[in-house]
Image (cartoon, rainbow, N blue to C red; front, side, top):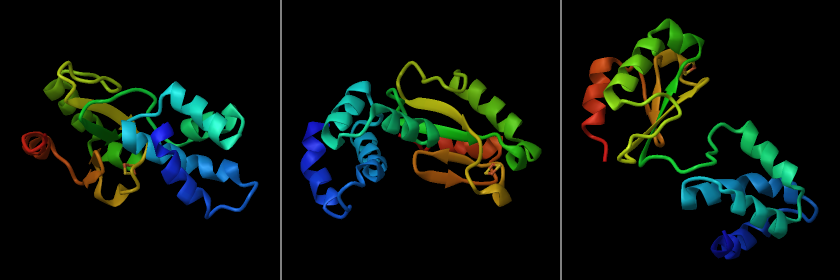
Length: 154
Ligand code: FES
């Protein structure tokens, strides 16, 4: 994380003194963007850099579902399983994905290509069922659309 400190310093200048805890979220986002996840050593470094209690960083990490604490596959597939998506076939979509990828939610394929996760709502309920692959939404998905999509992923 130390190589990001010059970048953090530029951002930090926008925050008033005493608001270090508000600066935790952008730091964590940038760390994850850089490494792909937030490691324990990143938390240690952030505690030292910002001078905030470790619990403040842990709270942000556990509140926001987008943060990852361990490495994931090159493609992160997130399947919504909340009410709107469930009513429109989320279970069938997840079942199709688990069979197709050979992994359960929370797992990564042996070749490190895909990680499959479930999420509670991707805020696109009107076009359920919804998947998010990396930063891209895929709405009104069907098993056929998934097959086509998987063929286009790196
Ligand atoms: S319930 Fe699936 S996007 Fe909201």
